[in-house]
Length: 151
Image (cartoon, rainbow, N blue to C red):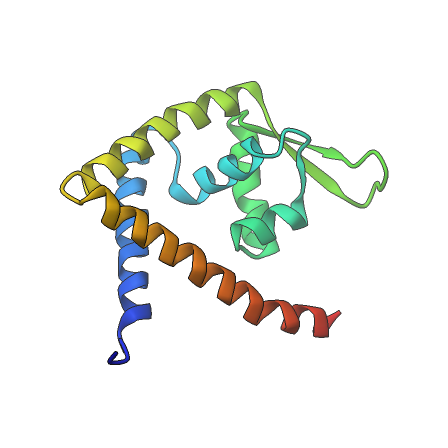
């Protein structure tokens, strides 16, 4: 097989197009794709997440995360509290209003996915998803030794 030299570029273009369109659709309700991602992670963690862990999961830096959390907190969608076991750690929790917003945005994202994938064969979509999962695991394996070596 010939090496697909623009494979990463194509993934980047697709990700940018997805984020841009989702941002366009979320703008009327005062949210962005970046803040939506934080709500997704917090929705999946009912006991909340330490800010550092949320930053790692979302793939953002600490200062960027703090700005996004500030905006979400101002909107009443998340709350920050000191960790019960370590006062140096701030935990972030999704609020009831945040859960309601999560459901609203999840419906918008689902509609966008259906629109984009409507003409695609479900077997092709499933194969693409499986390929992405394998590639993610390979990247995780590549970066894990680097992270462990830094500790």
